[in-house]
Amino acid sequence: MPPRPWLPFFLLTLLLPLAAATPAAAARRKVIIDQDAFGPGGPNLQPILMVLQSPDIEVLGITVESGDGWQKENTAHTLRMLELIGRTEIPVLSGATYPLVNTEEATLRWESLYGKLPYKGAWMREWPSYNTVNRLRYHAAEVIPPMPEGEPQTRAAPETAAAFLVRQVREHPGEITVLALGPFTNLALAARLDDSFAAHARELVIMGGSFNPQAPRRDEFAMQFVYSPRVEFNSRWDPEAAHIMLHAGWPRITVVPNDATTATKLTAGLLQQATAGNGAVARYTARYGQPGFPMWDEVAAAVLLDPAVATRREPLSMDIDLDHGANYGATLSWPAGQGPGLGEPAVEVVLAVDVPRLEALFIRLISARREK
Image (cartoon, rainbow, N blue to C red):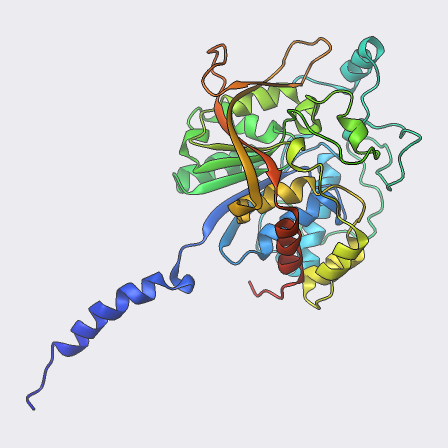
């Protein structure tokens, strides 16, 4: 048989499409996580771990702001977590310490007029008598109390969170999903640094807003919304930032509000199942995980990782009330396209989730042994 020099090339043309179709060859989704990452463990760091453990996600960085705790302490907990799970290649960027306009003093004045807020994050000087879950103790913004997990040896990147966000979307136009799980100050600052920041992202997924949440149980967490169903902490901490973030011009916004989380709870049994493995993430979560909380941010992370977790979605127009009256920071909404026409964006709101699917995803990701 005569030689056929064309045969290897012919076979290669057949095999290349097959190779490109394999999961190993598929491009991973680029994600930046923005979080008020109070720790160790708990409902702020556990969703970050879920995303880090997902094999089809490339986390470009974690940007940190104040909210549940102060930014400086939150950054330290994030750095230490990455050290303990062996993921120090991921940059951590320090962001906003204070809201754009709102202050602790203004919040105290508001409370004197309209009543106590059940939750104020880093501004909580004392806890209601019905509180049972261990919470942070009040301290100044620049103080980092002794850390149970030990102090980090690594340091945050020198770039600010807002500058990092702007630079990354410029370098990867149309590719980056921003997963925003805390107050939105960093995103608002990025939008003011670069008017085209949001437009150059792929999409925004947020944990924020509250529409008509129904409490299946009257526990201490339901008290945060049962008498004020339109108030949600991430928006209430920095309402002006939430408004700027929504108006920044994103190609797509997915909103995971309180409504989608009320049926969830990280029980001790669920945590035990997720930490039965011997991977670094399972070991960290076994030691520092905090059962008893609703899975607020875990739900938003799950919606990003597995959209089928969402069982009910609704298109709405959305904004944040900036009137400094009784509804300051509350969620405003209208049927899609029927708002006042003042730039309020169209968003897709996740109103319910498949709780067993969420829990299975949490167990699978936290328990997995994953190489970098």
